[in-house]
Image (cartoon, rainbow, N blue to C red; front, side, top):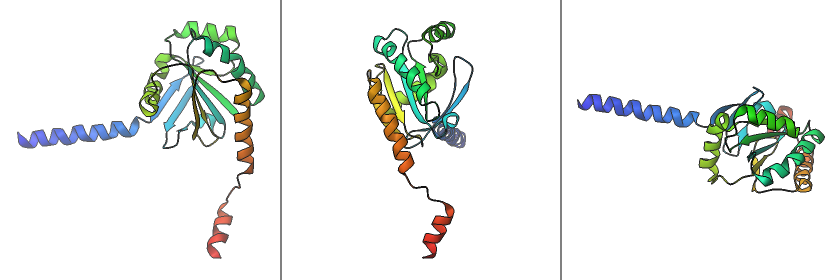
Amino acid sequence: MKKLFYFLTIILIGTGITQAASDNTMTLKTINDKTIHIIGTDKGFTIPEYKGKIMFVEFWGTHCPPCLMSIPHYIELTKKYKDQMAMLAIEVQATPKEKLKTFAKSKGMNYDIVEYKDGYAFVEYITQRAGWTGSIPLLLILDQEGAVQIVQPGLIPQESLEKVIQDMIAKKKSTPVVTKADTNTATQK
C-alpha cells in the first residue's frame, strides 16, 4: 500500500510539473478563425504570428465606454503602422462570437479580436501573472522582441500611443545588430 501511495504521489507531482510547464503556452482563435499562439516568457510573450512587431494587447468590452472610445485610435494606428505594429483585442464581457463579429464589422475594426471564451486561458494567465483585477480597458504594449514595456489601465490618448510606437521604432533602428562574425572577431582579439 505504501508503494502504491508513493507511486501515485510521483505521478501527481509529475503531472503538476508538466501542467505548470505548459501553462505559459496558449492558442487563441480570433473571431475570424485566425490562430494565434502565445508563449509566456520571463519578460513578456512570444507571439510568432506578430514576430518583430510592436504589439498592443488590449482587454476590453463592447459595453465599456472608454474601450469604445479607443477603437478609432487603434484602427488608425493599425493602418498607419501596419508593418511595424499589430493589435490583439481580447473581449472580456462575454459578448457571443456572432454579436462580436457584427460589432467589429460595424465599427470597422481592422485588427485581431478574440472572444472571451476563446481567450479565457490568456485572461487567466494575465490575471495570475500581473495581478489584474479585471478592470477594463487594460492595455499591454510589447516591444519588437515581445518584452512588456507598458501595462496601462484606462483610456490612453492616440497621441501618446503614437509616441510610444515611434520611440520603439527609433530604439529598434538605433540598436546595433551583433552578428556571429562580430562575435568571432571580438573573441579573437
